[in-house]
Image 1: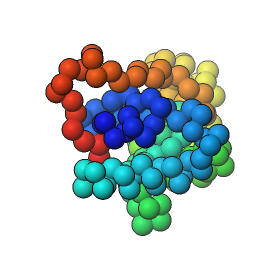
Image 2 (image 1 turned 30 degrees about the horizontal axis):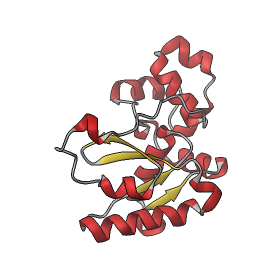
Image 3 (image 1 turned 90 degrees about the vertical axis):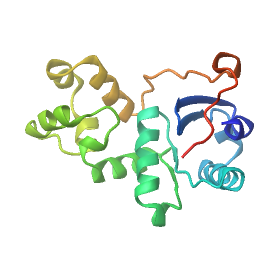
Image 4 (image 1 turned 60 degrees about the vertical axis):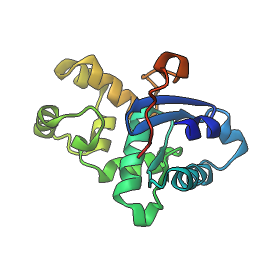
Length: 170
């Protein structure tokens, strides 16, 4: 994770092989897709691991971008920038609702029964409908799919983690 800390302003360790990076300010200076490729290449050189890079305005959209970057690696080169709403909607239309971060098998079955089959269907569902049938967690997911950041950023701290740090990002 040290490499990510060197390359980006802020890093949140999500799991042993995954992190969120805050690129606020970077977009004013660099093309984000090119920056994502630089991150990917640097990590490959330093760790010999191939990673997927998903770039988006919210964590939920970033997870979708990362999923697509890996799934369609030949077309994306392992990097997908979903900064534009048009690209977000195009990807969400192609992904089944169960691929959305936090939508499990049980929830996806209920959504499918309601005619909500794709990530885009979910994003376009009226909040009142989501609120009536599901929890506030799914409401936040819908808002995130719409580009509204609802999940805070928890910056990584070496002092908090101690020396036994997570060694890689995949």
